[in-house]
Amino acid sequence: MNQMRTFLPPSAADLFLRDLEQRAEHPDAASTIGTVLHLSGAVPELLDLQAYVAARLPHIPCMTHLLRGDGRRAQWVPAVPDPAHHVVARRVPRGPEALEAAVQDLMRAPWPEGVPAWRLVLLHGHVPDGFALLYLTHHAVQDGVAIVAVLEDLFGPDATTGPAPVPRTPSAEPRPRLRQVLRSAAVLLRHARKHHVWTSSSRPLSSRRRTSWVRVPVSLLKAAARAGGASINDVYLTALGHAIAGWASTAWPRAARAPIPVMVPVSLRTADERAVPGNRLFLTRVDLPGGLPPLTQRLAGTSAVTAAFKLPGHRAVLRAALTRLPAGLLRRLVAASTAPGRLTLAASFLVLRKRLRYGDAVVNRADPVMCCPPGAPLAVVVLLYGDEASACFRIDAALPGAESLPARWRQALEALAAAEGRPPTDPGTAAVAPAVPGPSTE
Image (cartoon, rainbow, N blue to C red; front, side, top):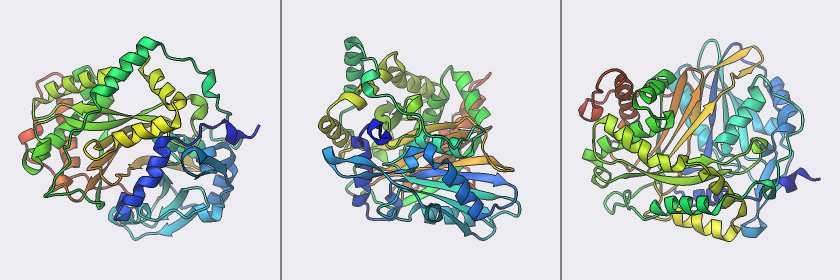
């Protein structure tokens, strides 16, 4: 059987992410995402890297397919990538700032038509001993979990050159119970109303983006989660909500007191779909606590609003919606959730569980690359790798003073972690320290 026929057809989210960037007035708002891997060791030969990647492509179908067509005619079309085109090298000047500038330049590069939308760039020269591998792709073709699969299949300890597993068909999946469907539908409808938090006639949003990275020890997130009896993702969202509310108290009054709407992608990939093309996710909205309550109270409030999405069977309902609802209905749902007045910031959370390497060179750091589409005020992704959590903030340049958000987020995390064993200090009134320098690449 042709393996292409076993894939789910391109989803409404895939088509939306492909077409949305056409509204962008600047390439900063392109739908490009990815990861920067920082490695120690000698700079490899480009031809060797090209051959290495080419040998593993058959195992990674999201790197060997194109998105073609619209509506019912949309399909995944197989293609044979040319390693000489997709795997390239660039020398950059010495220093992390030069590396960051090179990464941001590559993030804006358009995708040529007729070839799979990904590139792997060997960046070197910024450090005396080491190099970086920048992996970029189009969000319509790969979501964050697919990128994790790509990196682990290319550079993980069990990377293989064999064929990819054949995904099961949706008809083989159990149907959720009616009670689960009704409960999940009620949860989703509660968060479907328009909010207009980011609508401002005096300061309209733009397509220009500020890009910042900040890194924190994973132990900081774990300590905060342990202190608050919450998940690491709840801690991340709590600190983000606190950072936004603190900034908005003087810069964006609409978001200062009201609940903060955030779109959180829920991954619905099955194990046999780990590297298939497209987005296997459902964007769910949560309204984080507004204002500036004590951080412990904010964490409890965040855990309460995210609890609905952790109910047993909820993920099965979302999966059924993705695979069983008519394509036309899904397109209308995506259009409604991303309409002006509803579109808001996105917050993603990813984990690289396997230690990565290329030959003798070890990956000692991984920094994510996030996109922020037109109409969205900002987008954040946190990637856990080893002992470090790296966050990429893409912030609309129209938001005044929003470059303080990464530092505010880190300060909130530190205060939450300090709550373990003693009452936390509230960073809402604290001075904002400079943001951690951007990663050596991204």
